[in-house]
Image 1 (cartoon, rainbow, N blue to C red):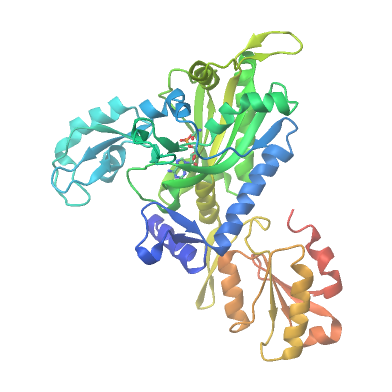
Image 2: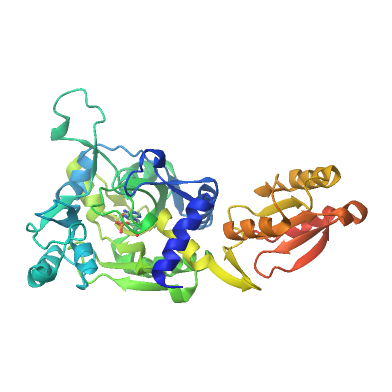
Length: 460
Ligand code: GAP
């Protein structure tokens, strides 16, 4: 399978089987915005629940938060987003296509990436200008490099005419909601440093180019944890966090050979260290999550802009300081795409090709599918419904009596269902059903009365 081929196959499977749909498709879609279908929402929820469990439930000193998408516009001034949250853009003078410069360079075979500084990218563009062609019209005549701010403006509270002077933005990252609630959490949740605040929620960015499916979208979900530490402990805690984040992706079942660390060479002035965990997507190794040591920049900026004291008084030493922050910032969509990429397999079975998603059992959207062998035998359908109703209390199950058993297996393989269970004529006599394993395709007979026991340890 070539890399492009694999991407096309994943995109097609996502649409065909109800994982991901283009947004408002009946109206022609909306670039870089996607909807999660019946199986997609289950997989995304399972990813989020795993993250939440590992972050909040299993760590005594990390608490959760759900802050609003809309925030006081000063937040984005303080954070530096209003002035500096921008990508380099050029415009084709012929067709007026607006193009993200690092992508344009890459598409023309010139080495560049989004981690380069503005100046570096601008320099590379100047040197290679004569061989760069517009991907839309094929000409090679561009404007100079401009900065394009990624914040998405809204007209919230647009009752007065002056909203454009200070628009309310849709948040560009979830962590700002954490920073501005740091004091509230500290005063209410009996936490003391070191402690973390975790949040999962939507973020919005006016990405210049829409490409690579759900890898880069204009509306997306982030899973962010900000850990507040004393200045002297920052780097020690950072190393611990890096290890834990790597383990998270292994726990999702991603193959370690498909993961790598990318060190940021161009650190912003306040950062102590910045690494990304990259995954080997069908289009190459790209960022899955950022793990950053941010010093005291975030709280200091918010203290300055809000006029509030955001320092911390250590209850034991009485020392007063502005906490330093280390963050783990991951995307739900990118993790989703990584899970699908890692799990997608095609196997030759005789003359046929079996497409199977070998997703971790507990991440799979549907855990167990229940079939009556034949749909026109009421006694089999009745028994299968009974088994289905028994199992669906604890597991997300699907009842299917369409087509022949072979077709039902193929459908469940494609959506990653770990177990298919068939009720046949023998079931009526011996009270046993056939349980078929997705990965080995092995079939075993299990008593209906033992099914709870059989599945108990399969999804933890
Ligand atoms: N608070 C830090 C922060 O937001 P980031 O590297 O800009 O850092 C963190 O974003 C993560 O959010 C990325 O690693 C990625 O998984 C996800 N992400 C960022 N922009 C995205 C986009 N346009 N579409 C999908 N996911 C995105």
